[in-house]
Image (tube, one colour):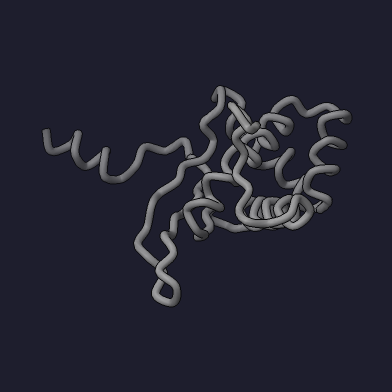
Length: 133
């Protein structure tokens, strides 16, 4: 029985699923704006995967770097994760990503979403709302 044993399986065998999450995480870290567009289910599966990697980056030891490299298997991404991304979140205890739901994809009607790395700046909409009040 699978009681309380939840995991996003994504209709793939384990090896394919791990490769998919690895490639999505590499794409998210490699982008300039820290945002990718994917399906909602893939976004929900990616979130805990990338947040654990950022937490490894915050710890910063050689052991944690090797753990991140074993999970990503892409040295330039691990370097960027440890040198650029993790220091931005040094004062934050989790919640490094956000999922913004988008519409349906034209071809097959799959629900889409954006996965973004949270920035330290206040959102533009919130800043303009507080200015008008």
